Image 1 (cartoon, helix red, strand yellow):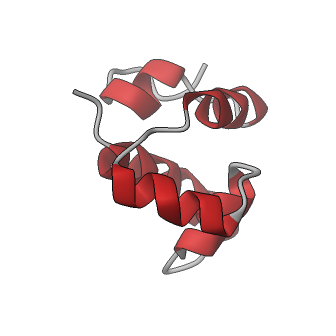
Image 2: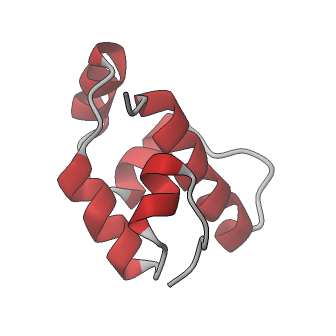
Image 3: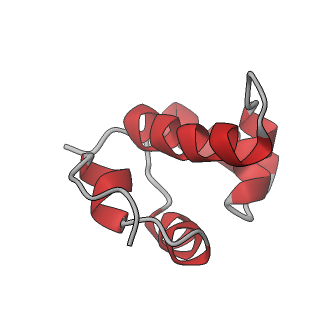
Length: 77
């Protein structure tokens, strides 16, 4: 099963590299995925991966969707 926490941690890794920061908050993840922060909190609680938002994020950042979901290499397209 694909875990919400694992997917968001991989997206967080990408954002940390791009923004050269030490920490990425949930609000920033929601913004990066073009999700309302309140909706993000709900899906986080329910452990529901927002696949469409993740797919758009992957496309916009040239990241392999298989890496985001399953941690399968290669990371970049």
